[in-house]
Length: 409
Image (tube, rainbow, N blue to C red; front, top):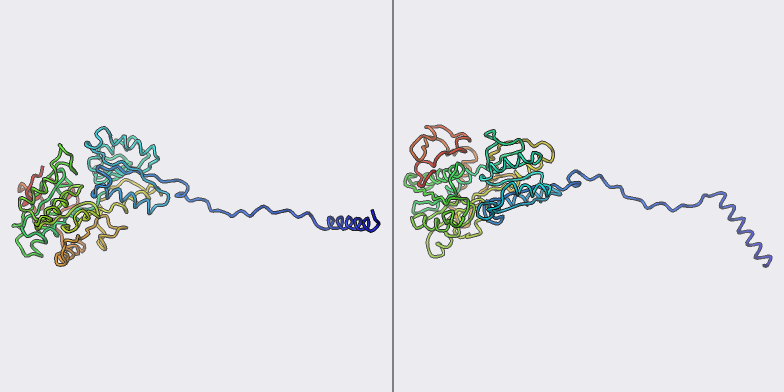
């Protein structure tokens, strides 16, 4: 090794020792980890709720309105999911009980279950007793009101009496024959009060806006026997609708869950007859036959579903009986009004003006139709002269009103 090379190496060794003495070794830092917030309760656990439907989820009527409400909740409530069973009725699922449907939903993690038919009243109570940690919202029931409900059952219903009054008004504006047909489901307190509401709305508008004698207006109710057609069990709503038109009705109001009255009316109009119809339950029902549709009174269940579920989530839920009025500032507000009325393409501007005036009167209280004197169909007194009906009197209607045609029992 040359003296020059050995000198260089000695210098480098001395330099290394000097650097080591003055400076510690450099360590590579761990990668910086971004701090993440703790998950919220909603994000941490999926919220599952169940919906049990009496008819098909896509019936364009009562059951589809509930299915749409469940979809509304999942749009508005983060990390929520619903499970459902439709067509829970003796014809479509004769071997399936509501308790079995509830068993399946609870196994899926459902914490709230909506049972959506008056026919489910007693079965809802039994299921609630079996699952005391699950909240049951029974739509259209009254066992909280009567004190018969278990402590984990709620009752909710929209005040469709107003929607039916508006439907009756629209029918009265359109009729030329002076005869309105009402296609009813089965007969109970709910269906009697809704048919009677339509009758009162029709009489008021026939007299007030048409200038005609309301006693000359015929209002014929024909019941099919259930909420929708069950072949071999109920009357066929298609035949019932045709019969009402054949007997002189030129406007049909539907009280059943499905759209046969509207479909039949559309078929008759296509054959050259001047006929109109008003479906029920579902916001988009007019789509089945828009040219003859005067409008639709419909349920908007979404906001109430959401409110009840949030109450369960935040621990403020308690059993209650709610019969909810429309949002009179805007009855078609999707986020606030449980009851709406959408005007149909067949409602002329002139008729619509009168219907709007009628709605405004209902909203400000200047029009009140459940005020006496009103008699039941058999002539007995329902409301005395000047007597205003209570909610309970309307809810528990014992008969149709005097002047209506069709059975009360």
